[in-house]
Length: 164
Image (cartoon, rainbow, N blue to C red; front, side, top):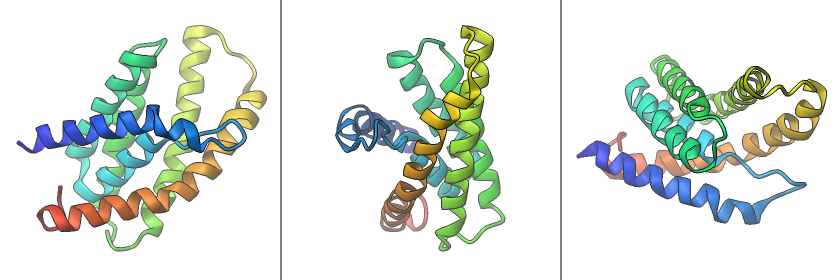
């Protein structure tokens, strides 16, 4: 039953990312709410749920928008699992840890996606990618991470006592 709930929540996050987030664009950049949700959810629920949500959202994104099926599945899955592992050693009431994880995950995701694009599509300009994609998204995601984690934390506490 909980995986059905996770799937419904993931679908709502995906719809939010692909529709409403397009309207909160700043300087051509939108926050990666799916990535922030994966980190926050995994931090709150552990590595197996983080892996599940990461793979599920990655599959949705690759299926609808991906030029390379599997890139987002792999990157989101790794990030979800890693954030869940780190959560074992952290206090879930401290918002600084998931915000730092969101910062690091944004860097890892963008570097990983760039490397996959080099291998599979032949992109060659890392400076342009860093300036145009990574840095603006890094700032935006770090700011948005506060709101996303606060929402996941609040919903998790109300739902089933510290777990979705």
